[in-house]
Image (cartoon, rainbow, N blue to C red; front, side):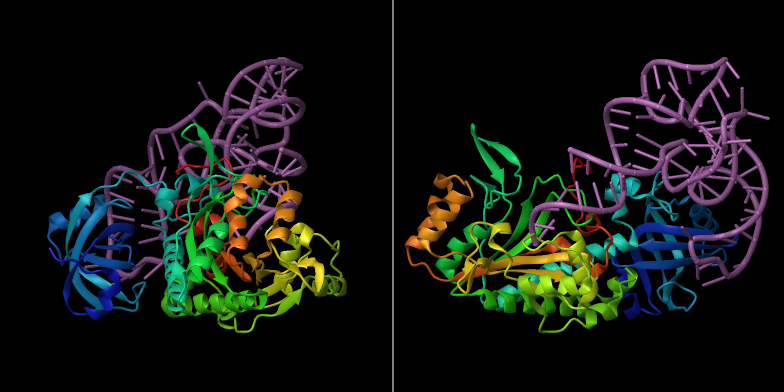
Length: 430
RNA sequence: UCCCUGGUAGCUCAAUGGCAGAGCGAGCGGCUGUUAACCGCUAGGUUGUAGGUUCGAGUCCUACCCAGGGAGCCA
């Protein structure tokens, strides 16, 4: 039997079609029943009148429970009374399986319960819409870099040592030795950029930090471009163009999903180039003007990100943080060696840091000293130092957190809804 | 890891230290245009776990477990 998808119903008005899906909700009123069916592409209401179908089919309609799988056949009709504008005058219903009492009812539920049932929760309208936006963003990310001559080079997930040494790692057994799940592909990107010029990696990364916030996952996806012969300005320019590209793509292709999510679309439409650039010393002055208490020399915390997000309606690029709060591979600003040539891009509306990046230290001697200062195992960085031995060039890049970008564009309250199956502190089910 | 709040029916929540409740969902019945439909009936409980105080504990105390919110850290 042929199958029509709900998304295509508008092109089939007047025709008889078969929808294969699941029962989303049902209402009945004596001699007429309304079956809302979802198929992954949308939801359509099927109208079953006692006068239109056989008594057997009509009777069968009573027993179809929420999320039962079924195939419905009927004529497509435009009708203002129907959610979505189109409905089906049903002629036949074929039940594939009658679902047991479905735990996620149309009424409200708590987050803990919904997360326990994440495998079912993703069937809900908003959750499905979020996953579609996520897929759109992934495609935009790939297109952006592929179209600009970046080469996708996958970096390893199992690594011999910490990339940054500062964050906690997931340890795994590796043939009697220890290995760690990657927390960034950056160091490998620096090698691939020296080989191929412009590269990027895109995959899952892992952080065993015991953080418990609405912006953190233990396993999240990150895209990291790296460019040979690039300085901080190049990195900032790429960052803002990248973000605008992603937004434009989602606004173009996933407007319907943003509406389902009740996202304030106007807030996204006004994101324009160039983004405001604020250096760390300038930011300290701004915090004073705003009356926000902040100690010069500290890294930004959640309250600071919130304040910045409230004061600007554009993503803000904060650059040149103090060296001492940043990772060992950051290059110092020649004009002020206490500041690093780095940038954080903070999203508006309080969604926090989307991008962290900057220019890398390219001098062998300086880097060797930094590794020592940060008490990192010199052995593990032997290959990394080679990159400064054989044709070292100024280079830089950044990392963008996929789920935070999804959270921002979807207006999600919590990052756990922005990945199909989130891995969170002490939680790995389902 | 720390701080705050909570844990009662499948779910969301009530219950002054004194009879264990409602709405939704489920089951049965009614209704030809419902929009989280509506109306009637029925079933559904070791009140997170283990101790303690009390004539009496869902309620008070102690410990633990779990969940939610926040902090630090980060993308």
